[in-house]
Amino acid sequence: MSWSDRQLVAIGIVAAINFGSLPALASSSQPYNIIDQFAEVLSVIEEGYVEPPARDKLGEAAIAGMVGSLDPHSVYMPAEQYEDFRQETSGRFAGIGVEVDLRNGQVVIVSPIAGSPAEVAGLRSGDRIVMVDGIPLDTIPLLEIIHRMRGIKGTAVHLAIRRGGQQSTLNFTVVRDDVRLPSIYVRYFEGQIAYLRIAAFQEGTHTELLAKMGALKAKLGPYRGIILDLRDNPGGLVSESIAVADEFLNKGPLFFTRHRGKVVERVETTNYGNFEKIPLVTMVDSGTASAAEIVAGALKDRNRSLLLGNRTFGKGTVQSIIDLPGGAGLRLTTLRYYTPAGTGIQASGIEPNRLLISKEEKSSEILRESDLSGHLPSEKLQRPTPPNPHLSESTPRESQPCEVPKPLMTLSQRIQQLPASPTNSTDEAIALAYQTILHQLLKHN
Image 1 (spheres, rainbow, N blue to C red):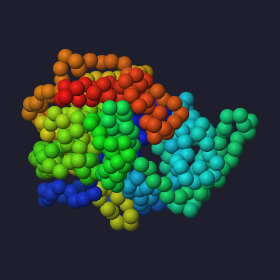
Image 2: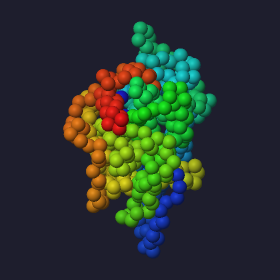
Image 3: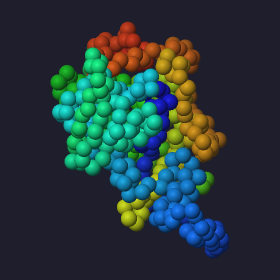
Image 4: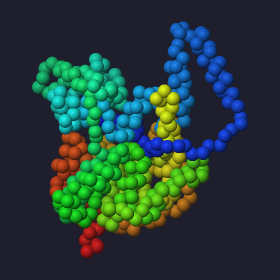
């Protein structure tokens, strides 16, 4: 999958999400004359269109068009799509259980998830999926490909596979079942440095974080520093990102939200974080979005962590989720996020303290929020950002090449193959983060 493809997948699946009520809105006494116009057009279509149209489909299309005209993240979701969305945010869904990548225009299986229906059916790493239920994949976008492989538990999906060394196409029938994707990956480096990768903020991410970091500590001893990897984290549930951030920050501001120019919410962290006193370096990139940007922005503004990498995606809005009759749902942009120092995230993103651009990013067209058609503009507040004491002559804000290899391995496999002392890792961002942590520990000793 190209860099821009991964961004599009991220945008389409998760966002900064609040399941709750909308801000109080002022009522209007003005009549909606456009409703009369809509009724007139609907009547003309129903009476004069060349074929008899279905009124429910016309109504849904009208609603979808109205909501979609607002911004790229406000969406009307029919019942089936809304159910898929809720499964996505929970990290659980019914599917076949494969991690796929788009390479040279082909959908390649990186790996079947352990114990998944795909593994049981015999699918292998490196298999190329050429058709799903008889539909060639070169005719549909990646998001729809993923959607077609998911569905109702117990139903079957038919795959046509090309496999290296095989002359003919192989056919598989895979029965969908519940699949659970982890959001937390941990590793231990020499010098008692913990590596923590958060892939997304979904239901249970905070609990999973404590469990896996606790197990790592119990097995290998206490850690003296943490490398937090938020690269390619597309966001997710705001409640989970708040809980995670609270583990790294002492009492103080985390973010605040504004609705139509007015502050409506201030969120603060507590004094009960498990990792708030452990030296920390955080990695971000152009795939770090939404709820992940909230965490990164707070860590930077409150001088808790040096940020390494590329400017983040720039999705600084929150979508409220509203249940609608008939099982449908509405995802509506209602608020803008701001970091503790008053920096607006929307369309601007978070600037790292030290800029590192991977070769993959340099060789592909990076897609950010500001590139999306109809995106909301930035709305910066005139409030100064405090200087970050981590910045020094040894950490200049300069662009450096950073090569991240892309072998046919799962994220978990790539993490486990990192060297125990990653100073010379081919992932130069991790190498620099590791060196930075060691340097901080030396200064404190």
